[in-house]
Length: 360
Image 1 (cartoon, rainbow, N blue to C red):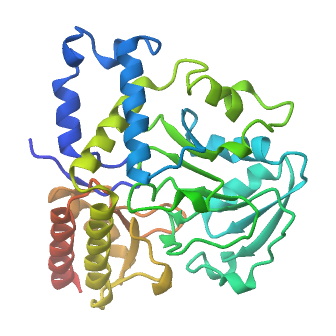
Image 2: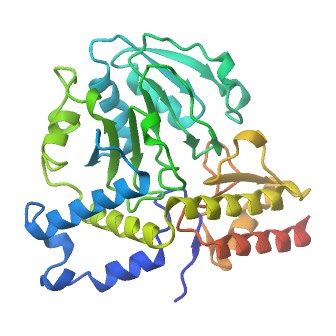
């Protein structure tokens, strides 16, 4: 059976090469007579997997030595609480910018622990743009400044890194990490759920500057304390071992295929193709401000929403699946992360042209 082109926002496509390698090693990893899923996370075999995965991730992102890399559980949403717990350090305020659903959720959770200064919001424009930084009401005494570089639902993305002075910059990079090169030193902390560009759901990455560790609130649960997790090598308890292993295979795949520079070139080309197909049509529309359109998540609507179900069913019949937009915005959404091949974009565009000719 041939594989579909899966445009899901997450869990998302994983490279077929990675899945094939995992399949071939499923029952017997490196002649150990065990699946990775069966290994003790304390054993030398698994520790070699974990160490190599971190080494490859550090190579890909050029992560400096004074940053810790944590392989955690709980999804990025758990970090909405963990971040204020670990970074407030006696401060009572933190800065957040509101550019979409995930920003709002982070803000709501942070309000349990501190006064949140919403420096700017694009909610009044239906989250279709990013407020210009000149309009931001930054607090130079904030414990940190949090933003979401890419909002998967509305398809809004920062194509620049905010300058916030000496305040540590914190970023939810769940849907952009590993899609292009990144200057890690611009950030105090980066976090990401794995299920977009990193690997399967169940793993969360946290990349945090060492000087921000060890200042957690007294009531911070041990599982959410960066100092405890760092000291334990992300193994305070049993980690998501197989997700960590598969992420390591993805890191190897990225390195083999030219690294993040190559991914950036491909991802930009894929997004330009798809946006061009939408913009040159009278039948499809993307309403996001052109200066902040996402490379990763491309929402669009049909001229006649009554045709949505026909579009989805006919697309699925051609192996183009999970194109339905989020329930809060409707329409369609094509999520085109690293593992989505350019051929998938070409197939989607070809179908869109055919559908418009039939119904437009």
